[in-house]
Image (cartoon, rainbow, N blue to C red; front, side, top):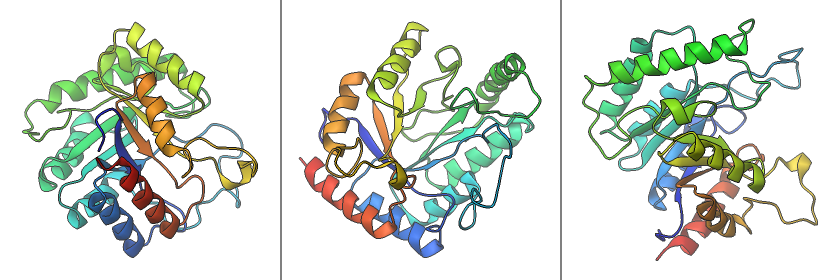
Length: 270
């Protein structure tokens, strides 16, 4: 792919109507065969608010464990990297989480890149009833614990060699930053904030077209088929090193996704 563009990964769904083994295999192998950098699984903390779930919000289909899903994808692919950002597990011991991730990394041939998420938006919560200051203190302690305990594992490969915290505080504690696309001003502001805090690692942008119900049929939308190439150029100008293209929140089916991936790969080819 062209050197002046960010690396491009592709998000596959972990829940919803398009998560059958056959569909997930089709998407993952398409990502690999078209030459994309990674298969990514996006996962976010639960959102605050009442009610947390109602009948209309329940996933339309099963919801898979992120590491379990990537382990299955690893068995169906050979070279593509495997990437996710998982919610900060306040209730799990670091060694337990590290063991799961390191097992996947070893069995996949050292293809794993992983990040930890404290929160994605101000109204996200990692654990109900815990004050934000306490969440942040425990997050810092947890990540430091992970980084210390990560050392004995032989990670190898060409990846980051360790976890990459995402969102608040990554400048102080991690090896990179993962942000979700809201708009270009927001993207530039978050990267500037990260660099000002001393963050020197790579920036990953999770981005995709808007949900169907939010689409203005007469407008040009960021990260849709017609604009994604130009959006990659703009992301590079903002200081993004990698983009995870997520077409799932827009409600695109697997056939449309594979077609879009093929078209973009042809344009990205040298």
